[in-house]
Amino acid sequence: MTTLSHIDNIASITAGKFKPDKSPPYINRLRYHSSLPKLTLWSFLFLAFIFLFFFFSPPSSPPPTPSAATRHTVRNISWGGAVWERRVRSSARVRSRAGLSVLVTGAAGFVGSHVSIALKRRGDGVLGLDNFNSYYDTGLKMSRKVLLDRVGVFVVDGDINDADLLRKLFDVVPFTHVMHLAAQAGVRYAMQNPSSYIRSNVAGFVNLLEVCKSVNPQPSIVWASSSSVYGLNSKVPFSEKDRTDRPASLYAATKKAGEAIAHTYNHIHGLSLTGLRFFTVYGPWGRPDMAYFFFTRDILKGKQITIFEGPDHTTVARDFTYIDDIVRGCLSALDTAKKSTGSGGKKKGAAQFRIFNLGNTSPIPVGKLVSILEKLLKVKAKKKVLPLPSNGDVQFTHANISLARKELGYKPSIDLETGLKKFVKWYLTYYDPKKKNAW
Ligand SMILES: NC(=O)c1ccc[n+]([C@@H]2O[C@H](COP(=O)([O-])OP(=O)(O)OC[C@H]3O[C@@H](n4cnc5c(N)ncnc54)[C@H](O)[C@@H]3O)[C@@H](O)[C@H]2O)c1
Ligand SMILES: *[C@@H]1O[C@H](CO)[C@@H](O)[C@H](O)[C@H]1NC(C)=O
Ligand SMILES: *[C@@H]1O[C@H](CO)[C@@H](O)[C@H](O)[C@H]1NC(C)=O
Image (cartoon, rainbow, N blue to C red):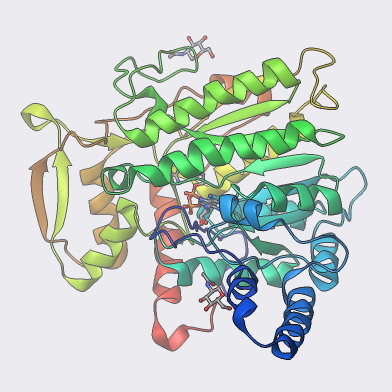
């Protein structure tokens, strides 16, 4: 069985096909019965009342108003109720002395699932939130949820844009920390579905910060930015002080916007905020939209893979960072986060604001990635080399991690070959129909 530390996930409603906003069914029903005979009207009202009471309202609190539900939610209201609240509380129960109580957004995602399990294992209280969107295979997100269930982490199916839901969660559990990993990821998909990036990475983040600033006590927040904010920066290695004002994709621009927005909430409302710029995270339970993942799939299928190169046949390289190293960086960021200083939405004093690179400091050319995969899979890849299109991907990334090393004790320890071996082992188990139960 694959160890639980090898979890990864991604899910969001925002990413995939948008489902049209739906008013709760009782709104429509209350309209057209006025023409019915009185008796029918009253019995209908009675039934509608019962229906509404038992199916839509959380018994212990009033249901969200229809207007709020229409404005903020894409999905059906699937939260609330005494049973639901008990699950939320039990998942978030702190089991170790001085443990944290953490709301993890994007918990059914790649990084979110690994982080949630690591936190739970050391005794912290963890509650997940994810909208299970169909940007990539929701089956993978559901499988990660199964793993999380097994260790006692409940993942609420909901959107970070749903302010009523977020307020409710803080009502039930006074979270000390928020690990915010929910986002629309992927660089090239922004050409197809730009609004999903704005919705999750900008609007959703603001919604989350709005709720965090108003609750009492305010939580400390650690969130995922991205190495993509360095954009066209060509000074290597990338350090936190380098310019980040030339994003090369809408994804990067929304991540950069997130950093600016976070700074505002820190400045005005005293929220403690730590941004982590991840560099190409990979590993078991990873994202199917990333090259190491679909190269593996295509090489095994005997399908041709496309390798991009820069101008004059220069290589494209990535600072691949293994998931376990990233998880350690995330936990350390949570552990070193100072308390927020605001209350009632007002700042009482200066609060902590930090930005860290979390990379591996060892950029690997994509050609090398492919040759490692060929060796591990024992299959020769059918390669096609094309010039790197200018649709968002930068030519190389390379992290300077001295700041994270100093402040977080961050020290990546897994090289690409070792990490890919673990990924391939997971991949072959997970996608082998005969071993479907092995994870
Ligand atoms: N994996 C990487 O290489 C990498 C690199 C840089 C930054 N990041 C960032 O790290 C974070 C985690 O990335 P990941 O690789 O785990 O991606 P992921 O897509 O696997 O996980 C994100 C999760 O968030 C959920 N989500 C998206 N929008 C949501 C919304 N509006 N409400 C609720 N849930 C929503 C998705 O369903 C998904 O499960 C993201 O912020 C991403 O931008 C990742
Ligand atoms: C919402 O609920 C209705 C009726 O219960 C159902 O038909 C519909 O498929 C649901 N939609 C989603 C997104 O779950
Ligand atoms: C890395 O960043 C630190 C500051 O965090 C800086 O002092 C150092 O010179 C940088 N190293 C390189 C090689 O650029």
